[in-house]
Image (cartoon, rainbow, N blue to C red):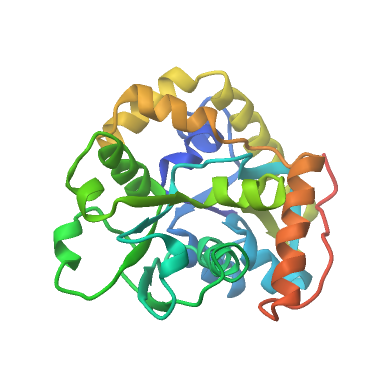
Amino acid sequence: MLRVGRIPYINCFPVYGAIDRGIVPLDGSLITGIPTVLNRLMADGELDVSVVSAVEYARDAKRYLLLPELGITSDGPVRSVMLFSKRPPAELGGRKVIVSRSSMTSVALLELLFENVWRCRPEFVLGDAELVDVERFEDEPHEARLVIGDAALKLFDQANRGGAWAVRYPFREDLGGVWKSWTGLPFVFAVWVAQRRAPVHEALSAHASLIASRDWGLTHIDQLSAQAALATGVSREVCAEYFSGLDYRLSYPHLAGLTEFFRRLVLAGRVPDGTLAFLPAA
């Protein structure tokens, strides 16, 4: 049976919603994990098809085939990949910035933005994968931290409503929005890939199920927003706005953003040079 990976964050609800509800069948078993866990399972060959960080594909492109028409992308602000800072980012040179362990792509993007947009070099420190309670970190010296996923959306919403997070971290940078301002391109945070050794007909079947489930999800955003509100504690309206800012395709503009990101990572020596290779569309 095909082993298919999924991220537990609400940003995947539109892709897996119909599969979860039995509306769209999936000939395989779902395995849930945060991005770094799924990256590792794919790298170790323990998953056949999965959503992974975009950087995981670039890191070992010869191992994977991209699934056409599927990605987690934004053309501007994303709301769930946020840098919360006590001072302007350009003033963070030499200062501690806590980064998430759970997303290779977000950390790589943050590094590029510091080098090319804010033009300073902070000291990056690995923090916990999940963060929702700022009080846990008040004794740890730092000037900023990268937060991703549902926690970032929740804290972004709290900050906008003037909560304690806004007082402690008055400077908030949405990495999707900064990338858009810098390059003029969308950003691809995650992609779906198949192992090259996976049986083609099974990978094609999984791809077709994911596309059908995504198409259902995009026509049932109200239902998914209610589910997301229960999962995060963020209002249904905020969840709906969040989903409206995401795109789950890999169109030409998305691929332009993806290749520009990879090009810059190659120039910085962070990933090997490679090419985009796709699973044949069903």
